[in-house]
Length: 90
Length: 104
Image 1 (cartoon, rainbow over the protein chains, first blue to last red):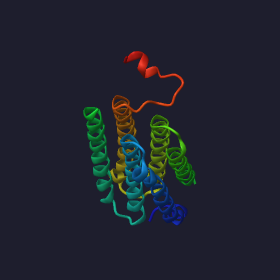
Image 2: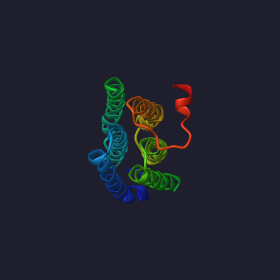
Image 3: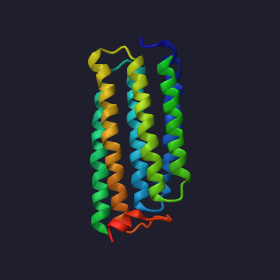
C-alpha cells in the first residue's frame, strides 16, 4: 500500500473537496451572468479531476487516472465551446 | 511527510479559491481568484499523490501528466472566458480598464 499517514487523512481530504465543490455550485445555479456560470463550472470540474485522482490512490486502482485525463480534456473543449458561444451571441 | 505538507497546502489553496469565487464582486476578479488558486492547488495535491503512491512508473507519470495538462489547459480556458465575457458586454467594475485602451 501507499504511505500510511497519507492514507489516513485521504478520505477527509476527499470530503473536504466535495464540500468545496458544493460551495462553488452555488455560483453555478445562482450566477448573475453566463460568464459566472462558466467560471464556476470550470472550477468544479477541476476539483472533480483532483477527487478522481485521490480516489485512484485510495482504492489502489490506476485505471481511474485515465478517467481523470479524459474528464480534463472534455472540460477544456467544453469551456472553449461556451466561450465561443458567448462571443458569437454578442 | 513532505507529501502530507503538499496535500494540506493544496487543500487550503483550493478552499481560498472557492471563497474568492463566492465573495468577489465581478466576473474578472472571480476569474482571477479561481484561475490562480485552482491551478496551484491542483498541481500541489497531484504532486503529493505522485510522491506518496506506490504505483508503477507509468502510474506515477500519469499524475505528473495530469498536473502538466491542468497547468496548460486551465489558464487557456480562463483567458477564453474572460475575452468572451468582455466581448459579450459585461463591463468590469474597475478604475482602470486597460483592455479598452488596446481594443477601442
